Length: 200
Image 1: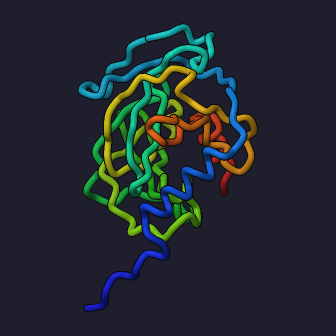
Image 2: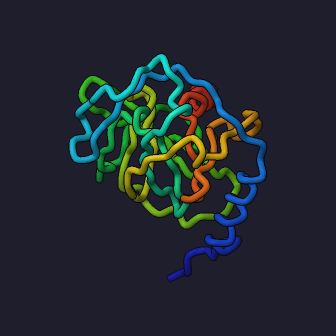
Image 3: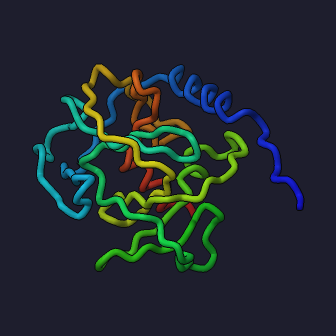
């Protein structure tokens, strides 16, 4: 039996370099018109209005869901979460002509979310991860997209001062900022969705 390929670099070293690179980027607040909704983790389909959608959520404390993708910790603003579901045991149906990071369609009620390999989107060419099979699908962008993930961690509350906000979009348009204490990237769901929609 052949041995699995060895990683190009040590995973922890790669993640450390990746986070250091993001922290040295120039960051500031980005504005979004996203509606403000919150989903409880124990009742993922329950939606509760928690703040005025006309206000910028980055100007006041906000809750975020921490999750892991191939060992990398990410944060998703809770009001932009549409649901968390177990990854199905059967293969997801795929549309023809889609790129390698496209995993297939996930049907939930009347919605059909396009599920993506989050690690491939967030860390393209970053390191040769062993590709841990996903356990969950996180739905975003009004159920249009599903982010594959390996571990759901916890919900935290962040204040604007806890975050180094991004100043320019640059090559990582999906990055809203970096939570300094947790050393994790905060997703810009609006820009991530646009990036996914524009990729052939």
